[in-house]
Image (cartoon, rainbow, N blue to C red; front, top):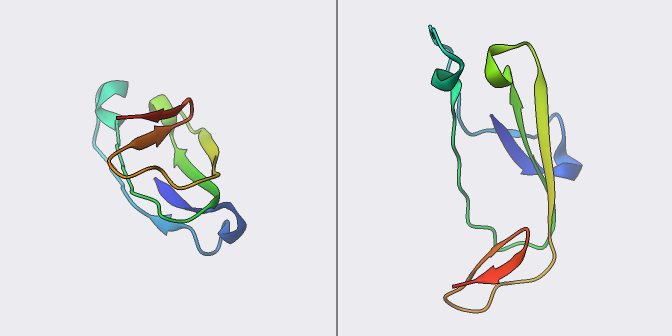
Length: 80
C-alpha cells in the first residue's frame, strides 16, 4: 500500500504497508493505514492485488481545510 501527495506519484509515493502472504483467502490480504494530515492538498492511497487478483486500486482525495480542534474529517465533512 502506498500513500502520498498526488503530485508526488509515482516516484515519491511512500510505502506504508505491505503483506506478501502466503494467503489462502482474499480476507487475508487486508491492509489498513491511518494518517493525520495537517496539509491542504490532493492525496492518494494505492494498493495492488486487491482481493487476491492482479489489480490496482486508487483512492484520491482532497484535504480542503483544517479541522476545528477536537474534530476529525472524512469525505462527508466533520464529526466529533
